[in-house]
Image (cartoon, rainbow, N blue to C red; front, side, top):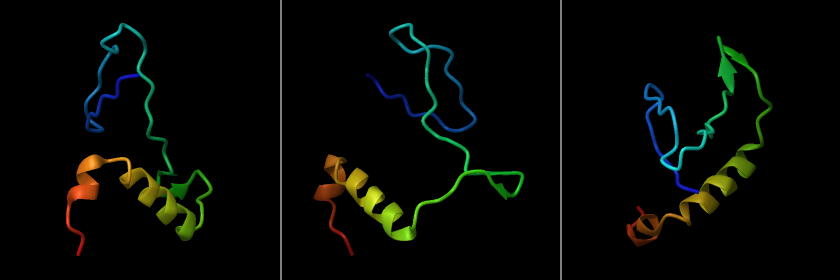
Length: 64
């Protein structure tokens, strides 16, 4: 499906196809309290690196 990137303050009522939008961000902290168990820093890092590899422009940029 199509992905729509909005700031946290923006809301879109419907998808361009007419379907409902599903937020991909899930809260981790609410009112200063942890509401979700976190993965280890190593697992988080590995996940982020895997996601970054899917962005073509990231692979073209020189890393320092």
